[in-house]
Length: 341
Image 1 (cartoon, rainbow, N blue to C red):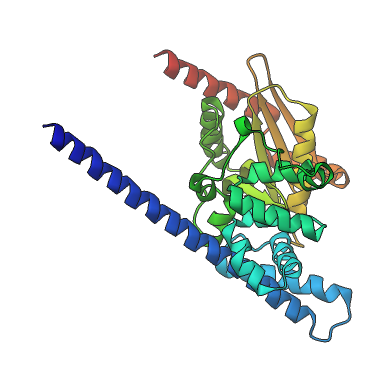
Image 2: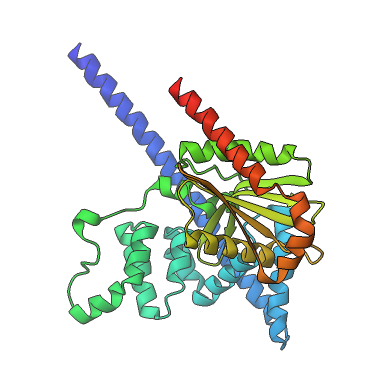
């Protein structure tokens, strides 16, 4: 009986090892392919820019046209900002050997941070240490921001920038959740699993509520990601209103509305106008919803130059503040009754 138990434990351990090894191989293959592809894309962009063109605008034109073509065929992940990253990646490491032997050991998120370090010796240090110590992206970013390389030089001691009790190593699970992986593989990105229950319920029902208003709303996406060269941002709900000919962004806060929330929405609106708005679209509208236990606040945030357009044309087709407040309160009551039952 004892031998049977030992054998059972042994075979389960072997299967665990098989799965762990398979996952590691899958990660390595995807990671290598991604880093290689982005380096090659960057190389090809630079070569195209060097075809005897002297105009500075030519490079911008290449990236804009390429972004439109690739996005149409391969989906998101090829924004103007991302293509600039690919170009910078190649310019930072024009030697293919470095790309294939060192950079490919790290994720694209790691490389994207390291290539912005201006000092060449510091870049090499972060590349090698991140790979050798298996640093997570968070630890790498913290070490770069705290100038660990410069402090190491000045102290001439072993690197103690990450305390033993605070070590956070890279895990395959982190790679799987990396937004760039979803872009590269062109697969849907899952919703944020850490959303609060109230926020999830409200957003789920607000989506249907807005669609049923019959005021021209066409659903674009939920937890819609929009990216800069260095950061990702997620907007709760994005619609396109075909009557108003503009994007309408909704972001819900489960706490009281803060001034930084308004600033964040204004940033979302400006980013959408810059990255998503077409020439014949009207300015993007941002609507902030705040649901706390005392009061529901609705705050509209729009670009300064579109205030008159908003006042004269948009209001008749948008849900009124009263409609939004009533719907939020209705869903809060439904959720409360479900919990109590």
